Length: 142
Image 1 (cartoon, rainbow, N blue to C red):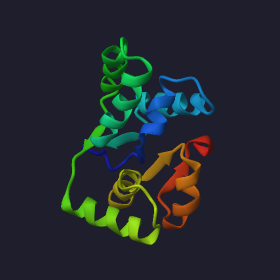
Image 2 (tube, rainbow, N blue to C red; image 1 turned 180 degrees about the vertical axis):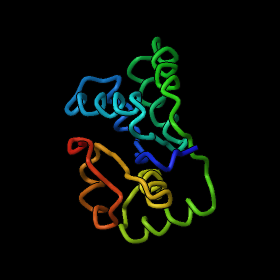
Image 3 (cartoon, rainbow, N blue to C red; image 1 turned 135 degrees about the vertical axis):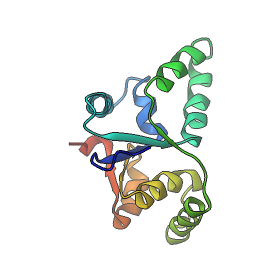
């Protein structure tokens, strides 16, 4: 579980996909992972992130999907499973920001609950939910 002496960052699938797909701010995703490997931070994800990432990988790289996914699993991030408290916080977020996808709000809810920071590359979500704090755009990491 989380080492309370290190900052906790909850990352979403948009960050994980940047480790596989060359696109804007990919270097920031690698910088975040390198900081994690140096044991300066904790990284966490809800287990649903694996399904989101695999949805992308299996469509774009079907023959490499298992290999690419296994590389993500080797990161050994802290995994958060569904809890009633997380679902309640997620519902609060989706009520404050209508048309917000429940799964997007799940990442943010985890960061709020665990006094961490949600890191995302999704600028639309960031713009609407930044008032809740506990969120940072990947491009602004560090």
